Amino acid sequence: MKIEAISVTDLNRYIKEKVADDEYLKHVFVKGEISNFKHHYTGHMYFTLKDENSLIKCIMFKSYTNNLNFIPKDGMKVMVLGTVSVFERDGVYQIYCQAMQEDGMGNLHTQYEKLKNKLEQEGLFDEKYKKKIPFMPEKIGVLTSKTGSVIRDIINVSTRRNPNVYLRLLPVPVQGEGAGEKIAKGIKLMNEKKLADVIIIARGGGSLEDLWPFNEEIVARAIFESEIPVISAVGHETDFTIADFVSDLRAPTPSAAAELAVPNIIDVEAKILNYKNKYKILLKRKVELMKLQYEKCINSKGFNKPVQIVQDNYIRLDNINKIMENKIKDKLNIKKNNALTLISKLDTLSPLKTLTRGFCITEKEGKIIKSIKQLEAGELVKIKFTDGEKQAKII
Amino acid sequence: MKEGKVSFEEIMEKLESIAQDLEKGDLSLEESIEKFEEGMKLSKECSKILENAEKKINILIENEDTIKEESFVSTEE
Image (cartoon, rainbow over all chains, first blue to last red; front, side):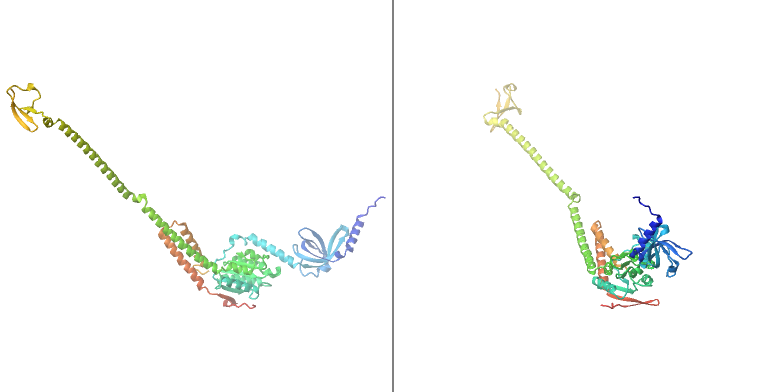
């Protein structure tokens, strides 16, 4: 059986009917961003609606375009109500729009992103511009609404941490038309009149619309130009408004902002006491160190050197004296011994001794005669005996 | 910040630097004593500032270009 090919027209018609039958596609409500928008001279509008991943062609006939309350432009976020249908001639499906409105939320998001990027390029978010939050601010400025829990939380936390805290509330609207201007004016006022040493701008959670004033450029610039450091606590912890990016410090909640602004007095007093004790200990250590050095110096060899030298010399002196004494003693002994030996020798040789043994000494004219040859008969001699002497004649 | 009046921060920073100087220990005895006395004086000043501080929860009310400051009692309890 041969398959019969169908014509393009037939195919497109078939698809068109298929699409036309689908209930859902009869009334679609679609959001997206307008691109290659053309307002045809016939009054009809041709454009595509896109998101990050895909796009669809749209057409809005003149009869419907008259009801628009805004002028569509490329890049605008819109929501369209219409029917999806196939334009047979081109084999294209498209939305035939009957109504279109701006996508508020969508637009806010784009504005937010756009402003965020712009300010980021300008460097308003740079770390180097972030001012340090003073450790102990004297006066704390708070910009928030005077009703509601935010200001109450801030007051409670601050007074708990420092019973003598000085808070200055400058009430500002935190949402709605004109809120941004008032917030910016408030920040400028605080600066001009030096009303505070730190400023907290805060508001509770809310939708993107609610938080919108904190995304406005006027507020961002006021924060950036503020001489006084700014802590921002806007919306829920997960919300990040442009004010949070520009502020000097972002706190997740108003209470956290108060904690960051107000140091706990007990800690401060403890810190001061700690310094006092530290000084006492360090000075004591210094004094002890100096005493040690003094003593070390006093006992040091160098300092005692002269004394030492004197003492050493005394010792040497004593030693020398001792040595001399010994030497002299020795010499004396030697001499004494010599003398004794001589004496004893003398004694033994002494003629007197021989005399006592019966010998006698013969002298002629005072000289001792040792040999008979020295004597002639008739000469006179003297004979010495142990107990005396006698004259004698040689015969 | 008030000009002229030394801020609490500056005093605290001074206290910290004195602690470090004494810690280093390379000061002469006279210098150490001087630093010690200065530190004690400054810490008394800090305590005095804390004692003199007085609780003020005020609201600023603008009329024309003057600002009135009144005590603020938060409405809802």
